[in-house]
Image (cartoon, rainbow over the protein chains, first blue to last red):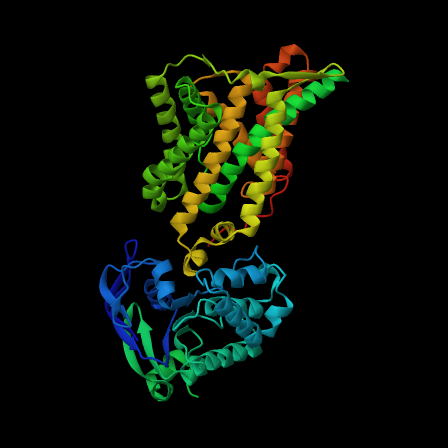
Length: 236
Length: 295
């Protein structure tokens, strides 16, 4: 479904990605795991068009998208839920969701998705009139995901959805990610919380300083001694 | 008492002009963090446009409408040709560019027309005056108030209720996230410049219609004062800009009317004094909330 080929990205004079290649197949959860600054968020931003690559290709369903604008990439079905939620904090919960479905012209489809979002996250329905900045961290993350779902993604790019959340909320977030997979959405997940991410992933790639250094199924990587030592905090 | 009411009317009129111009400043700043110093010069372009079209003997409605269209074209062109290519350079770069655009527009007008003040004459209908208990109320005043109120209501509805208005608020709340929603940010920026153009053009025509003279640099100082009004109200906020404009117009006119004539020639200085005092007491402006900048 998504194929990244030899992708190089610069941030000003800093080389952020040095030729990474990976694939995500339909229906999978694939994780990018690695330390801060490894280039995980950069990878997602480049796929969603916020950053332009220096060289390399990105194919979504066979079509090259690396030079497309963000707003067309969204319309093609690739939705990026950014790090740090990035909700519209001065606007209401309902308006945030409305913006998520900005390009949905069909009212029936829009209403159906809104209904689904409220079903998945009942808290949002209770608070739909509230300004989004007043929600708790966990609720904001739920809103960010719900907002992403409003445009009907085929591929969801989730950047650090568990960042800064209480442990119990982190578990809820991972439950939601599994539910999304069950509903047929393909997911590319970026996480520092490596253990939880690998546990729910079909496959994963380990990144270090802009390169992919290791790949395998979630289970294989959890069992890998190097991965355990570096990313999973030693012996399990 | 009559004098008080006369100054009140003058203050509200000047305040309406400032408010309309301030909203344009504020909207563009909200989205791009750009202080567009060429915004005031759009008033000048509208006036020259109207003056030319009227001199072609076109009907007054067509002339004024045409002047607004011309102004919007200039507003969109300055974004497209000057600010968009420089956007990656940061807000200092576009700020300098806006001063350059302002100077350029004034000099082009000087070159084509002349640096002299010229008379701006609308049809007699506009200069009718009514005298109510000794207070003079001109047709131009009535039109200015009515047009301002209608525009404020319409624009606030557009911002609150329409899809484009919501996208505009989203862009000023969080530009990167707005892109991820599938919003074509460039279109929204053009939309903001266009609305700003309509408001500045209307304000410019009403201002010149009231004071019956115009020159290439007419928009600059009013523009700066309208910018002050936007900052006083809390830049980035629609209501703040409108109220800031009214407050500033009223204070300026009462200052000019009630203080001894030896100091009234400093009324522009008084505007900036008000700015300094407001910013000392409320750094985010009267109606501004603390600004959580985009990361």
